Image (cartoon, rainbow, N blue to C red; front, side, top):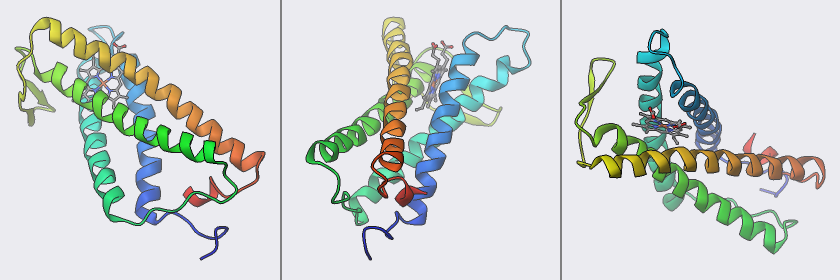
Length: 177
Ligand code: HEM
């Protein structure tokens, strides 16, 4: 297949676009829920949705990681410079690192204290680590600031894709559509 017609396979594209939507949704919901008033109808439910969807994203990215190892990857387009290829690789690795640290820190600071976390009265999240209040604060700090870093990275990644599509007029974005 030529470079111009090749595309990522269907599952890769589904995971890519659903991850984009879910990660933005998690960022926005996290941002909103920490300021919710106790009497808001969302006070109880939004954090539970946030935690449930956060866990779903974690599983989706574990699946993504396994697929990376097993499936054949599309090569970079020949028009891309070596710097662009290197930058794209670094961004990819950083995405994995950030998503795993954010989801794990979210899990550990939610479940590491004395409170038992049961989502929607049916899904109990096991306490895998017992943390001191200082460690919980560190996890919460990581969770918040790495979530900001993730959104900045996602923005740069989207700008790079738009630049390839509009200025370079190559197939970088089309391969993922
Ligand atoms: C990549 C996935 C995730 C992203 C982007 C994300 C993002 C965020 C953001 C932006 C906040 C607000 C932080 C603040 O302003 O203090 C937040 C809060 C929170 N997140 Fe996540 N989150 C993710 C996954 C998870 C997971 C997997 C869990 C737990 C299973 C979780 C549990 C929480 C909890 C409990 C809060 C509320 C913290 C508080 O009340 O201070 N998050 N999240």
